[in-house]
Image (tube, rainbow, N blue to C red):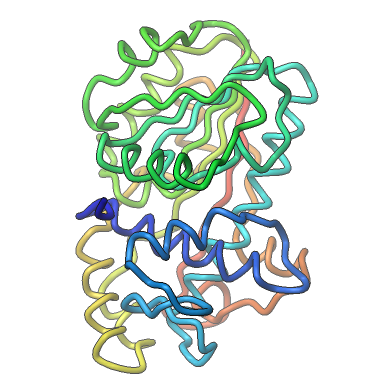
Length: 292
C-alpha cells in the first residue's frame, strides 16, 4: 500500500514530527503509531526515521526545527481541549482533515464517545491498513468518513451517524492554511449549521500566507529547498481576518493564543519565524464556542 499523494502528503511531515516528539525523553505526548505510518509510507526498515525532504532526524535544519516545533506543540494544545470537552460530556468529536490522527487510540476516550474522521479515501485507506496490520484498537467508537472537505461533506457525516445539534467538538488541525478565504468561510458555515449552542471548535491558521521566500531562505540544502517550495505551492490565504473577528461572523466566540506562546509554556525553544524575525509568521491557535 502506498502513501497518499498531493496535498495529503503534507500529512506525512506532521506524522514525522509526532514520531520525533514521541521519541524524546521530555515528550509532550506519545503517539506510538506515528513512526509506523512513516515507516510504511517510505518502506523504511532501519532504526530511527528516514529523511523525507525537509523532514530529517539529525537536528541540524532550522527549517525543519521550525516546522517540527509547530506540528509537535499544537498536538498537546488540541489533546488537552479534546479531553476537557469529553470530560464535560461531549460524545461527538469530528476531525476535519483527520489525516494520521490517532486520538481515538491514544487519548483514552471513553467507549461511548464517537470520533468521526473525515478525510480523503486514499488517506483513510492507508491509515486503516497500517492500524489493522499492527493490531491497533481504539478506546472509543471510531468512524472513518471518506470525503473531500471542499465538497459537500455534511450529508456523508450525517449518514455515518452524526447527530446534528447534539454536543460536539470540531477539530480542524492543519487545514485552514490550505484553504482560500471562501473555502474557509464555507467550512465554518457548514460546521455552524450542524451545531447547537455550546458546540466547540478547535483550529489554527497563520497570521499571513507563508510565501516561498520565507521557507526557502531557511533551507540548508537542495532537498529542503525543493520540499519548502512544494509546501509553499500548497498553502493558500486562509480566513480573511483574525480569529475573533472571523469566527464572530458565524456566531462563535473565540479564545486565541499562538504557537510561540505554547512553545514557551512547555519550555521549548521558539524558532525565529514564529516571533522574532523580520519575516515572522505568527500562527494562531484557536478554541471557539458557538453562542446561543
